[in-house]
Image (tube, rainbow, N blue to C red; front, side, top):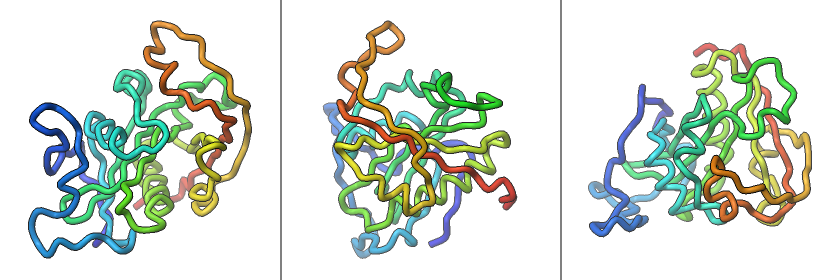
Length: 212
């Protein structure tokens, strides 16, 4: 199955909400066909999706930080979300935006950096889904945002080792100890969405020669 990106945003191919509004992960498998599941990340199609659907999938699958407000993403421009799709069902989701702590990063332009705010993989996704998805998203965002030259993401040391970033050619550039955010009206819910762990910031520089 080839990789592609639809222009604009996709709605969900099936509902992730029960009648009472509770998000569910089923039906996970295709509703038509032989019921197969992907055995290789090469079988995925990677597509851009809308923010609301991306937040819904993240809430289902993220093992450490399922909560993220739509406002926290919409206020950061640019932003974009992706999903890994197989047989009309999704197995991974990623949410990107301009970094919340952009003022702490050396830069020439505000739109030269995008931060991976969430990456969540369904438990039924095959190995190496994350690294293949990261590679695709880097290529796509290089085309989508003309001024983008760096990608950034934070790894909580208590939750992950950074293997997916190493496998995708990212570099660790900084480490910071945990510091609680000071609550403010603009950070609604921030107390419950922080992971109390030292963090490593990883970055990847884009190949701006990619044109196709």
